Image (cartoon, rainbow, N blue to C red):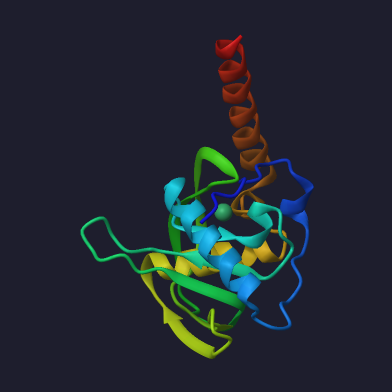
Length: 174
Ligand code: NI
């Protein structure tokens, strides 16, 4: 297992569209395992290919609650094929935008189709936090971040806040 480097804003790779995976090879399976390990190590609930510098449509997530059994999910080429009309607000964060959070409107549930790590097609109806996570991660594959769902003003403020904290942290290290 390898802990991968997580790219943060403003890395261009986060704004690019990831490409579909043709065949789920043993190498892809290994990358998914490394992504999951990286996600757990950084205390995230989801991680997309772009975030580790790979423009491949790969996603890992685990939205199990603290008192639940782990529920790791690995997706290749995930595609949302149906979504609820009902929307919900959820306070989101992202490993690529560390320690910044904002309310984002998402579909209450989605049905996602994907290949599992063995190349088998799966269909999943995601509700609750998992639904939010699927939408957040598939957005990543299209080069979209949760802050892109905010008003331009809110987005700018959040990024400014992140920049300020980064500057302070850098100064503290001098
Ligand atoms: Ni994210």
